[in-house]
Image (cartoon, rainbow, N blue to C red; front, side, top):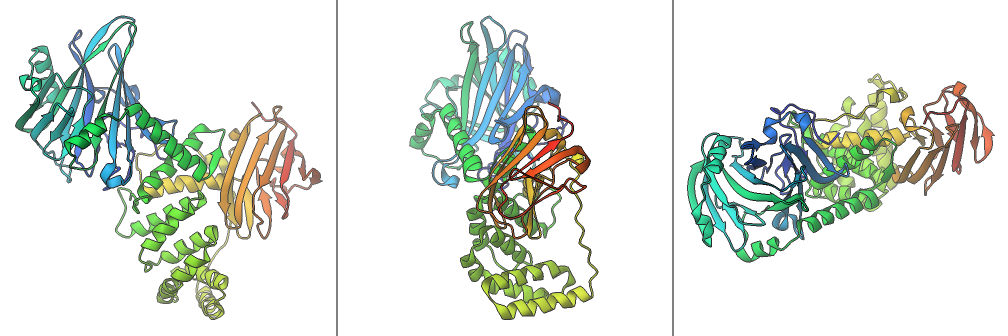
Length: 563
């Protein structure tokens, strides 16, 4: 699941606000530093306490001493905090873009310093910049240019940072920057060049640091500032001045509202008793969307050369199941229709979208791929999809041709068709350090399968719901979940006394063979079951069959569920 890795301080693990090689890729490490691949840099936020003469940095702490999360648990706003003596440092990292993503994207790092003592306190905030080359070799700070008018610093004539105020101290270091920092601050050395309108410094150092004074009074124990990083290389002074006027808190609120609307209203809206599972669903969806907006996916670290098509297929399926058909259609239309996976991708899209215009435009490509593989026994599932699509288009000759091809392959292929019940006791919230599009897609598809999934010509409801979710008074809500036969919404409610579980269905959906309800109860645990308020039979496994038109079912248990 997409989130924060449980990792030692020496290992790299990221929360991602974007995709590799994309403008939106701003990465947060477990030690609190952040950077981007298209602008190869790393920035760290430290605090120096002049009273104790101690430098506080998350690199010096254990990973469990730092707290990393996404805003509301799933929005692409990364929040990181760590203790710094009598202070607590909290940073909010996000990307906001107005208009074209490539030109206008801006990364924000809001820094909040909280004084934990009821007295006045001062400190020094330290922003450390380290260049890196694309091949992960350490780079060098060759030049730094400060413009006091826009409060901007340009490093190596490429990356620009905007500050809320001028730093009181600037220096470069080719060795241990923490040692250099201690020496510089404790000696009270000042960089006089900061007092003039602009300063320029030529260096050949591994890193540079900018120091800002922090002051908290008894009445105002919070101090904050913002670091802005335009994600395009060149910006005019006028543009820098405009960016400086933007309010970081307002920008963060805009990002939160945008993603809340996109994830909850434009896509499927689910509400689960397990908050971690619900957050994992939406964080994974946001991760996929950030990449697919640019037509890209993020392959895992062990992905091979042929895995990209597989990653796309998984991503498309997850997005279609999340009711985001248009973005899949756009990406499918822009792809070359030559991959053997294209048939499965097109069939999955059609089952959810029922878009015959797309199917007609892609039919020649589908036939071309099918004809290349019609003698390949490993391609039998794809050929069965071709038969289905040909039938939908009324292409009788193609239906007959590929049905015969499937029959020939079946004669020399041993197949089994067995459906295993989902073991809900094995479902756990797993936090993964390996982030990829397939990991995000698998999270979405797995959670959707817990709630519902297609089984041939019928829809299975609730089979993967863990028993722990069905406590007294709990509710599971699913709104606008697309299926092969239309859109379904349902509410599953456990009565306050824990004796009754009710399920109400709505939506423009009629599976050919109806519904089947598979809750985590055996027949011997059920006192009675009703369909549309009429008592019905229950299979030994606890399965309840619903014909077309049925919209409510309830189960009364012999023993109440715990609270």
